[in-house]
Length: 275
Ligand SMILES: [Zn+2]
Image (cartoon, rainbow, N blue to C red; front, side, top):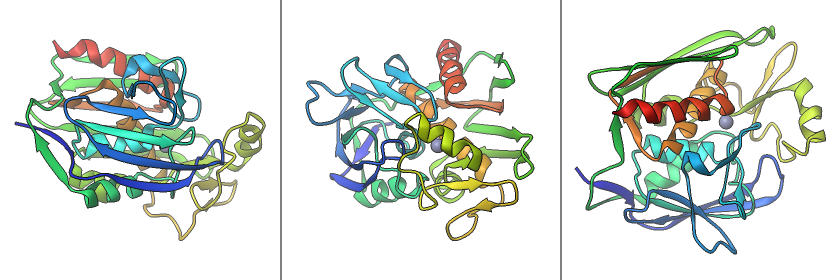
């Protein structure tokens, strides 16, 4: 058993989803420090862990009280699903580039950088206790399993173009790359104006999001999967769980209607289920 980081520095540029401003993410190899964010003016990097979560509206933000990095979940999803233990992510701008709205561009450049094993035990913990919780309409259950990490996720929305979608996957690097990472973020057309008024989604467009109207799902190049929306919810869930600072092993998780705020609350409960 050894820890995993990337072999060499790599970077990706684009615009931030919520700010609409230019941004860049530079990934640096690291040793024994977990996944951290840094940027211009940071005295010390901010660890991507639950206690640093500062916001969960339309994305997950982390902060050390001085510096805030918005919308970390797509990038963390790729890093966690690829089994990376140590990585310093330098963000030039307030949020990582949204790219095409999925995790694929991040997964692709991390894979292209290559991986390196370093000394030390990887950040993996076994789930030992069943955990079940409802937060209003949102449901989670984690049950210990012999091995692996699987998730069954139901996306439900009364909107005519959504309905009920179920996705059930074993989470590992190859399933993530092929079946989860390419799923893009999405929004409902009626929400867009509201989001913009709230100062969010300024960089959002069909280049980086699916837009759901009353009649159709607008998607650049067409949908990548018939259930792309549910797959993206799973991608977000994996990204939010990455804030545990360790990867769950020996667990099956079921969730209905999950979102960033409840994901973070559930992750805090999961922390208690490891001993
Ligand atoms: Zn997302």
